[in-house]
Length: 448
Image (tube, rainbow, N blue to C red; front, side, top):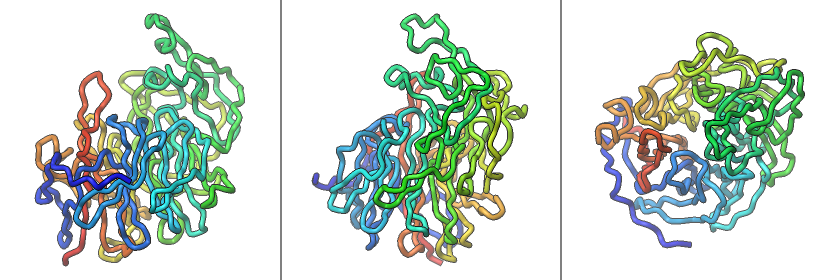
């Protein structure tokens, strides 16, 4: 195990520029985290954090690390040597369950001494969206999210970074689907001559056509899904599907499963505008509409037409029944991430979820960069923690929040921790880059 590293001075923090409701106090308890992605506590309340381990702003880099935060704010390495970026962790019965974005995707069981083993392997990783954090349900099983490989079901120019390496990747449905036969034209990403064109079908590898009436077989290990298993990895099964990027999962105090889902974007061969971001209650065997519905509404509605493309059409000839409407909806570009439910009256009723919003990667958007309260019973959303000046703190060098990515209450339920992934710098035409060691862990307490 490596020696602890001292708090980095690379990120200035100033809680005075962060607004919290009357009676609450916010403070920075640790800095110098390297692109952190998830936080949880062991049985006695010690703090553990996953770090992505990549300078890219996406979760496709690696390898990741697990660190602990000591009472004096120093950061100690617990374990590393993973294959890909780590996207979160959850403490369950003496060990942390850690999700890894790799090809294939995995869930590791990591003990507090740093030893580890793989409990779930062979997940459809790679692509755009990772295997997401695990949660422990009242039933004793673990639930975790698996993102889609593409934006809206079609491999295209927005996937160029991985198509050249893994040209066989595509999305996989949870049950058999019948295609409408839509194919999409784009530059040929596999040709050295970029003036050539290619056609790609939905749910197909790049450059492979689909045909009307073609049946794509479903698989338990599908993309855009919620899966569940026993804590030892046995009994793996599909719980729900038709999501795009189920990034955060949380168990309501009454045992219901909820997840955050990042909507489709106006990019790639099948751009879709204003698809929004949402919190879903997850029902067993439910289908949530991706890639032909956004928040329960068909993408053929004119509201989803992008400026950079035609009105979206269905890529599926037939659709399973929709599982229902979202518990809450947030604007596109909010960067909805992870969340936790209130477990103490000082933070609200048990229907109150506190949701981290990291904003868009450009940092220029009008939404996100804060923590919001969501009433999953009514869908009402309001700010809980936000900077005095909108946007990430780096926009005006204020020392406030940059990009909250996780919210977690401690074992008592009386103290909230907000994990801030840190500063991201975006340059036109280049991938966004996260600034090393700029992540911060914030603490929110009730002072009356």
